[in-house]
Image 1 (cartoon, helix red, strand yellow):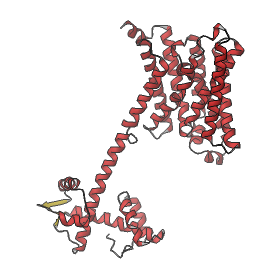
Image 2 (spheres, one colour):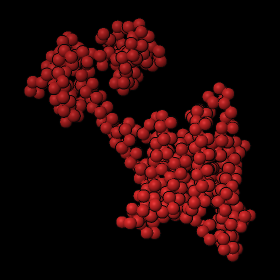
Image 3 (cartoon, rainbow, N blue to C red):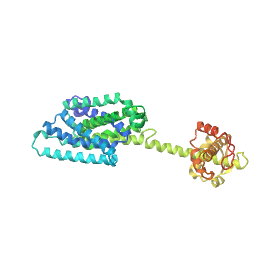
Length: 428
């Protein structure tokens, strides 16, 4: 209980270093990860994370100690070099980018493991804890580390703010960026540098193996909540910061619980929840929307079919036996009964035993759906030169999503045609 109280109050300097360090690392990485995610370069973060290991080892060999500044410079150098090599290989050879990433990742990581092994057998007492860069050890963060990471994270976030508009454009359309005169090569190098800096600050907490999750997962989760890039970066930063805080909390309050893996676990759970419960894009929301659309289509097909039958019987709505209706178009029995009940309540249908009839409102709605169907058939036949016997299926789908604006455009474009390609009257 005392440990929990100390953590909440942040009364211990060690707790402050771990918590603030974790939050800075995860938030800044998440912001940069948004641009990598949108540029469809999610694997780049993984390549950089594995490529910084030889830089860390070389920096240690040169300096002889684990000075944070020297370690960061070494990691940044090899991380940046790895991205440059990936771009060169993809641009100058026939090797595709994903293959280039795999090559650079494995080669650099292999060199890093080789150097790390050599250091461990060197007898240098200062190498103790260097292996924590593989899997991270946020609990080892101290005040000096926090100052260094704060500076790097601040540089990353400030650069994103200053170049947000330009980075936004190249994230979505590099060709457009070139056409309006933006320095695309410089901006790509800038984004590359920001990615490397984000990874370099993160490896201390989560390690090279798990760093890609911190870079990309918050961005992927945030994408489910919004279509606006500015809001996406804020949401990603919040998700990353919350995961960093929660990971530090679990690590501090539970014995033998590493911070880095818990940060990754928590951010992954948050991403999974986003995949399911986010409005509009979430799996549950999309399932509900699909169910509603399916019900709407069934209802419109019912009104359309009743209108067509009425049209064949002289144009006036009459009671039609449900069995007769199913002879014209087969409907699922249960769904049909439910829809008839709802249409009765909304005043679109009248029911008498096993027969149904369109009301005036139902007749008008059915007439409009038939009109849209036949207008679209006419458009396909007249403008796309599709044979009349091939337009029906496409119209069956499109009729349900034609808006009044598109309807007016079709009428004007086709000059208010009287007949469809099958010589059936288009009702107005």
